[in-house]
Amino acid sequence: AQKITQTQPGMFVQEKEAVTLDCTYDTSDQSYGLFWYKQPSSGEMIFLIYQGSYDEQNATEGRYSLNFQKARKSANLVISASQLGDSAMYFCAMREGGQAGTALIFGKGTTLSVSS
Amino acid sequence: GAVVSQHPSWVICKSGTSVKIECRSLDFQATTMFWYRQFPKQSLMLMATSNEGSKATYEQGVEKDKFLINHASLTLSTLTVTSAHPEDSSFYICSARDTWTGYGYTFGSGTRLTVV
Image (tube, rainbow over all chains, first blue to last red; front, side, top):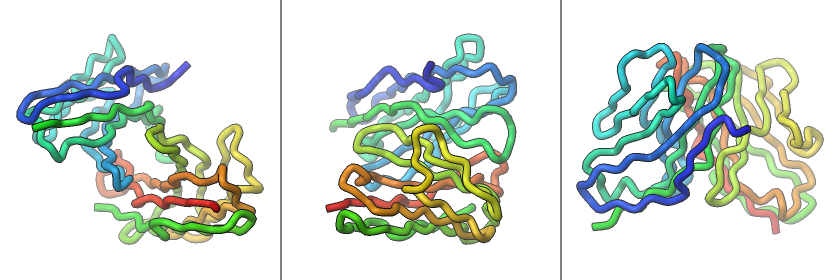
């Protein structure tokens, strides 16, 4: 079974509109972390936002917010006021457990296209 | 924040030759480095986890004799693709735990390998 599921291969949004990118996860660990990364065509991985499994409040970072629904095991990324520069691939990722030596597991990604 | 410098950014090599990719942690000690491979428009797939001074742990299906990983110091991890073939053409990217935040991961800028 997939650990991270992103069901939207592509999303289209107009400038200044908000967009939600879906992510569901699967783990039996009580301690885990959820991440969102942006990958432009250059390939670099740009960290956007983090949510710990014990965090009670949804994480926010500027125009990015994470809609964390623990019972549903979902961690959707909300981008408010989209900009042309937001066009990129977006990955949801999870770190299972709290150990320092644990790698991130990535979803398949969602390609976001922002038009003017 | 923590920075991982990855070189080269891109490389073209002839089939049958070997290519070495380096990842250096510039302002922190990376006891663990994760190596990923990414095909175009696909997810990041974990290849192996390297720990300073010990043998790397490879994911199932990854040929350890083909993808040699060395983590000889706390600031340098290398991936050598031996006897490269066109099917090894891909984007390779390294990652380490971000000791500045304690929960995050910092990524190298990636290496685009093309085998002709």
